[in-house]
Image 1 (cartoon, rainbow, N blue to C red):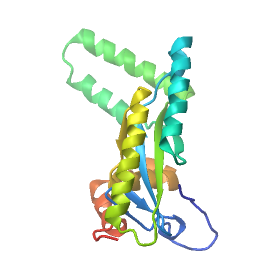
Image 2 (image 1 turned 180 degrees about the vertical axis):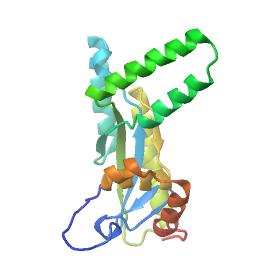
Image 3 (image 1 turned 90 degrees about the vertical axis):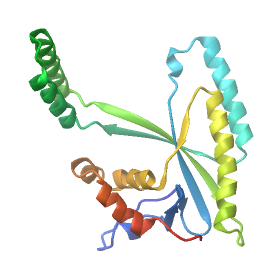
Image 4 (image 1 turned 30 degrees about the vertical axis):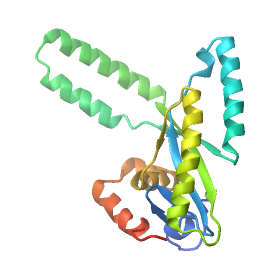
Length: 209
């Protein structure tokens, strides 16, 4: 989909990311190469019966054949920041008036704190990246129309597998790249609405390409 390149030269983060612009959730990678990012709900294959697994494999094969172009499947594993969750637990404990519930909250809080001292709490997000390479004379409306058709085919194919697909809007796409390129900063300093608006002004096109 793109390449994130780190360099010893003092260059801006923007110059090291192969994104020319984002408009209506569509990534413009330059050279008339475009991408749409779908966030997809997972299916627990291991919990299926053998017959259900065979049926899923057959359906998946049929889905790939129906797409007619390459797809990128991305699995994003991230450590959950538990500080906010623990703060919310503290607030619930402080506001709780029933003794029995306060005891339960305290025990649960102690359990969570002991758990995260020896284990990382991870979350996984799944994405499918839908590509489109436009013809030289194609305008943005044509690009958008063709990508919408491809996204519709992919979403319906995933639905047959029991998966729900959601197209990421422009600001969520930028946030995804931010978390990839600066994972520690994204954890310590998550994007605020104000920052997203600044990124929107910088990256998101407001005119038809």
